[in-house]
Image (tube, rainbow, N blue to C red; front, side, top):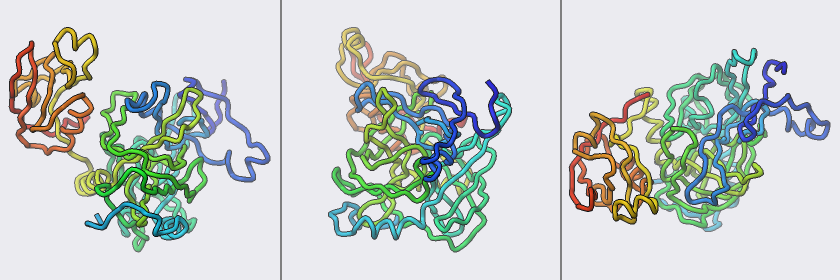
Length: 388
């Protein structure tokens, strides 16, 4: 199959490269087929809290493909319908940008084009987006709400939180009002703004469906923790765009959606909480990388088999202990079952991951575990996660 430059189409759900799609007259009029495609493979996989058939995908759009992707202080971020969506959109749309990328694909004899969204973090040109939108690309172009196009460079990427910062050489940009996830409630209004299917400055409305979700990538990437779940209509190209509360402040960066077995969206989307994204962004701007606490363990949840073998019904089951890591130095072993971390009860591996992420590098923590039917406590000092 010959592949024209910039027109290669990868469908990860089907696991194949497809022939380029041609414009249909009606779709072309709307600019639908003209939107750049999607590059990244599936970030996600099966989400533990979702039905077994729901697949999580990143929502940057690459290569005409069907691939699926403080502040307000103490002010409440919950919404009670006091501000109209029209007002929120008018205020927030200038903060949200479209991001177009290109990446060489020598094995295809051409280039991959992609698109996503971003949020202007600072008026001096720093833009917050999702890591999978810009990670590994060769060129980045930002389109402002005014239609002006600017070249951008990558400042830093953090795949652990799927957060990235890019920079344009421009000042006096309209910076976003940054909120917090701390006061969110299930049922609050959520407004999403981004570039779904390349349609820039698209506004959709939904609600906060759940809080504190843990999202599991299909790859070896670490899980995304404390995610905001929403039913606002989000699709390919929304990655990196804003999720906004009823006060008109950004509360999350849209990151992924869930799809059913027929690849159709099922009204479930996830956003990285703005508290996490902004903290990481500040590190990326200051040093080019983000630091994360690390225990040095690989584990899973208790299965019926492990429950029968080890006599436990819940906890985080240790599969592997990294040599020389904090857990190893503390005396932890494979087949240990962690039941408490820093005084917090641990019922699953997800809970252990969240507890570690919420702690700090250098923190000494008490870890209560079960080993061969006996309960004991060890102490570990969390280290900085090694960079890969």
